[in-house]
Length: 387
Image 1: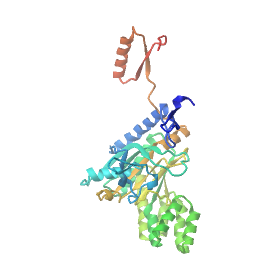
Image 2: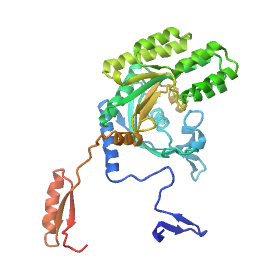
Image 3: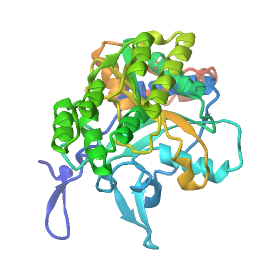
């Protein structure tokens, strides 16, 4: 290893300085140009739906992402202290930050608020990364002050439109409703601990573990049978209607009714071919309160987008208002586009104008005219010139 690749600390320890820490990476050249183009294309779709861009700080007070709010566990947050001793964190998630902005600057606003954002989110994964990044690029949208199913439909329609704008065509939006799960848990009188364990098992598609958990805790056959429905994927409205007839408690029935209404509105958008229903879709983010969804496609092992309704989150910041949002994970999306062979158009390479000391003035004038016309130009010394 060359001397340029290492430095000696005051303790005499050699450490590399040209590599990045585990879980982060450099992006440059065409790959970065593709990422920028994807972000621009998605941003344009969001603006066409009336969403206004905002920027939140890269780090916030710890309380913005505390356990009570229901975001990532504290052990997965990058925490540090300022000079006053306040605990700060690198944002792991944009939604609580946007909720804070809405509560602070739009506390008295009753009309629907539409915001969009893009930037980096950070998560200090405590287990093996398994290819996941600790710094991820995200772009998303939030619709606040609207608790209607029409807002749910707009957010999902916007997500579908944005994914299509990126060049993706073969993908599926799986839709669930956390209220269905909560209704069954209340009907069965599950303890909070059992509900949490069952949520983890079902969201991980480990239905055998869910069955064993309920059986070991002494829950009867009727309770275990009601939770078996989480293994079913529902493809159309008729199956949702049939599910409603099989549902015994009003909270879960209302959740199915919401999914039926949502499916009908998205059919009016002409987007039903992208939809499926998955009752086992439950998030580790506990602030979700209703409709929840994830977008899947080929070429990546993780969702390329996710979102849902979070009607209680803004109240933590002093504004009692419903909200729904979605987030597109740009890095997995780009991986999927490449593996599916989808070309992302990027700006052409700049034109070259060669010069010598004697022709530099003319070359500069020509470059200035071309740049004024919107053409990219690079000035280079003539090949026979010494560097």
